[in-house]
Image (cartoon, rainbow, N blue to C red):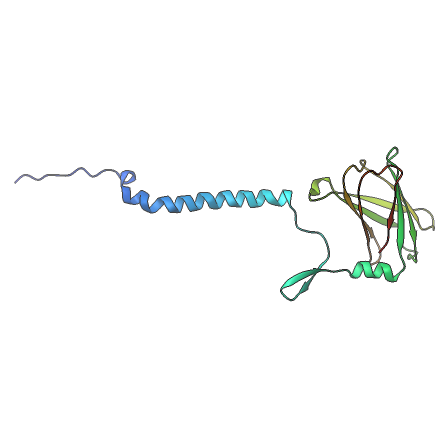
Length: 171
């Protein structure tokens, strides 16, 4: 009797192996691509930085800070000098005497890389604050006045052109 030995191909040439492994490898590849897109999307579309409150299963915009500003009778006028980069803020209403600085947050759409914060320092004991812009405003921006002391803020959505423009913040 003569024994016939059939040559068995190596493991990587077996068709059933690839039939089983192909969907698994495809799922892993698509999963890693989706992970890379999700990580890169954070840079383009960061989480919202507004005040949200839980309402049942959803979220609603918490407007208590705007209501506090209205209750205190606060309003403001902001003058931006494009030539010198000076920002002059005139506040109206009852401000605490210990308030020495207000931050002007400039949010430029969804691109948080272009957002910046400008500290506005109080001039003596007046209701006036001044600071300097890092760069000129050229696009639609959301301006938010946030005090260092207190639980209020004022917001305004500014549209270009900004030359000789007085921006009024009213709660």
